[in-house]
Image (tube, rainbow, N blue to C red; front, side, top):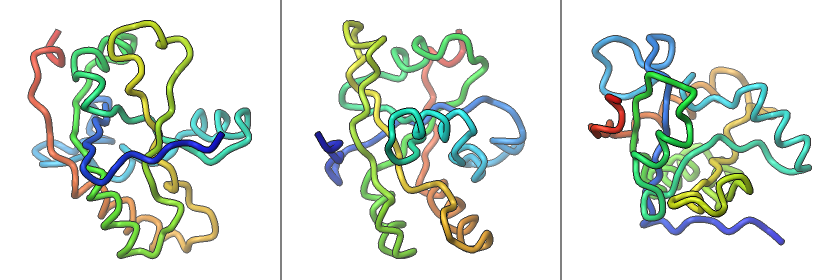
Length: 155
């Protein structure tokens, strides 16, 4: 069954380790490393036999506090909202048709409140794109992020 895309009106939440390599001091939004697929993301795609996905959360189904709790081993965190319409704007600007946000429920969270809101941001792997173009795409995408201030991030 193909993954369902989130609607353009949806807003996703991206959790990022609060480290200067991802969020430079004084920056309004993270840098491109915060959304670049990791080796674990690539291994997961291989295991699933599907596209590489970077973890995000559908804000309509998962609160910031719930998402932080699901990632409790990774601290400290910062959280950013990324509207799907921003993802789609970048897709058009860069003619990056694989760029999309899809539902990606995690089995281990199925029965937990907010657990059904896990999604995947696809199309961020470099593929055949020249490195400077790929970096520009990632940089443009993070410019659509807005930082979330939530007490759950300070626990």
